[in-house]
Image (cartoon, helix red, strand yellow):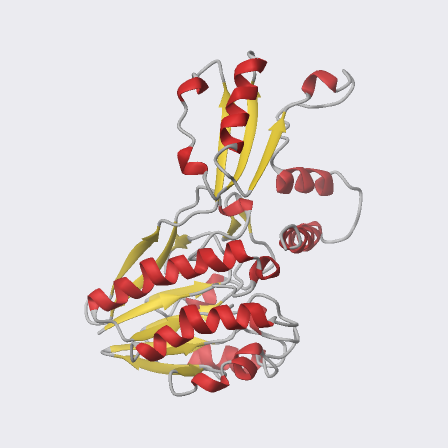
Length: 353
């Protein structure tokens, strides 16, 4: 048996922007469903964060999701098991009120919402499914982890020591050693894919923020008999970062056609010929990009008494971390960093309507 795995699809992200809705539709129609059809896959497993906003989902996102995903599942005779992720639940301390139960009601023949820790059998593979762990289900979840008899576990876990985004490590989460008994743990939640020992963060299947730029995205197919996990690349990208240094490259011959319908950021390392730079920017703008940002290094305007060694103007999370590290406080600085990143993510989500 072969099983298609999704996670962190975040329907309605970025204020249900048409750009991101179309990007998800392209992924489903041109990558996900064709691969499933070619391989005869009829069972999907979703590891949480199906919807994006934990408090509400608007009609545009619901209509789009029904047309591009749910109707396709029904039309193709497919089924999906899904666990709640943290973005699917209304309250932070309980999973009971969640968007999955409220909004997938017309597709209950196709969608199985797994609200309790459960062991599922997919072919010969016994897989434990663990919904988002919160205060309300913590003791039950810990008991399940200790007592269940399963080969693998699928969850939506917040574990310490794994990448939240490229180069940014999680602190304060659960200890990964709790899951040592399982041959393999597949989990959603962090959007950057990473793997250590038996823990595999699958990463998101689509790009949502600048932190996703040039970070390949995949969905996964499990062969339950051979226990192999295959990564299927999603070639549809939205973010393109260009490091501009005219000491090393002639940008007069730089191809820009691939930038159409992309968010583009030009990070200027060296600009010795301003005329050529302006022409390069004009060529990018002529490609009908969604947005263009230019990040320049203004070190020449920084006073001599300011410590600027290693300053990177486009790395906002690093700047925030450095600032927090320099603050004299007894508060938990790692927790402050995580909360600041959450605020930054929410702010980014408001950029596009």
